[in-house]
Image 1 (cartoon, one colour):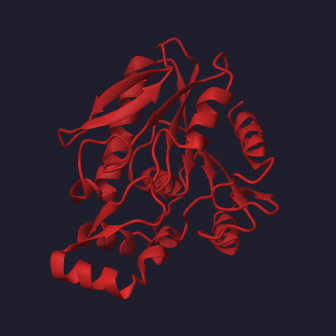
Image 2: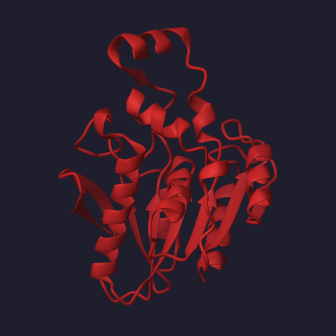
Length: 248
């Protein structure tokens, strides 16, 4: 693995980790969850667990996450979509013969679904882990002190067990409210999607995930007793096996 930075459309650097040499036939782009990073246990599991003869991997940080040099003012849905575009096109230039695929967790899966709908994706296979299909709902009811901070300062500093507190702006929240994935997702011809979700997910209701999968006829694998991080005993290994089978 080696570190790499990709220049965003907005001038800042996107920190990345990859093993892509340029000779791969497949490359998996990994998008992390909200408040997480490219170094999350799940991202590292995919990067280290996928047979490198089978596919290369490329993980990156969203704005204000991980080692990103920018703060929460740059954390908008459009910037997240633009950064995925920049990463994807860098990968395509680096490994022009490779089939591009996506592995996305939680918020990253939400962004990936929006990307498939709003952009012209180069990838045709997308594996979604604990997809935040109801992402806007998570910010509908802020705590009293969060609401006061939001309206007095125009942003709030949020820490819900994240790697570090995040600046959440009105622009980011407005973007969420305008992009309910149940209505914003448009299936793309030729794109194959698979979902995996724990039935005990404390963050993104399994019933919501099932409703979304049923609505768009997406294959959904249930992990019994699985929480949002899918780190209960045996769950990471199952996620890895499912992803390997899907990408193979």
